[in-house]
Image (tube, rainbow, N blue to C red; front, side, top):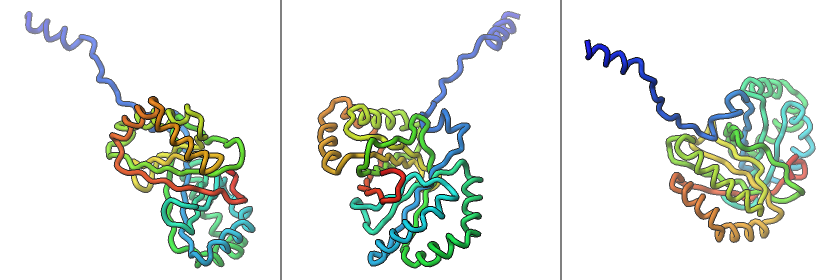
Length: 247
């Protein structure tokens, strides 16, 4: 009987739930907001880069009639040149599918731009990303230049490295030498990859800010923690085109 009572007390006792691991990348608005951002990179034939850009400039209104373009840049340095990078916003995957179907049926877009310019592209790369819940698309104060910093994190996902990464980004933001435009986590493409898009007034102001940040103990501490989860990183210096919404 005593053993039975003891067993009942154990069964009925309040249970302590194991702590849940929450990631700043995978919780919050993204749970109910399907908005996605498509990263497109075109590697162009060197002799046709200027022609391609001029042709797109003249036809950009045909493309943006179907979906929102966040920005359009040329890569000045940081990897292969003669490269353009652009970001497109969609409400969800169904919206993107509908846009792609509409573009395929848009004769003016096909005849004026797509078909004549396809031969100028050597290679295309596409990634689907989500804006992390703790970040909104920033608005730069004026025209400038951009840096796209790409971080390949260790397998395990944001539950492993998300909080440390957020602290490292915010440490740079708090110094104020650069404007954060967006932090994007890849959904399709290389997994465990995060892209951080920054605006700077110039390449020199960016360099001065970076030197300053390397001497700030808050940045050093936050980066030291985050880098323990890092496998590789790279960046590219971007120049906005005349028709880019983000200047």
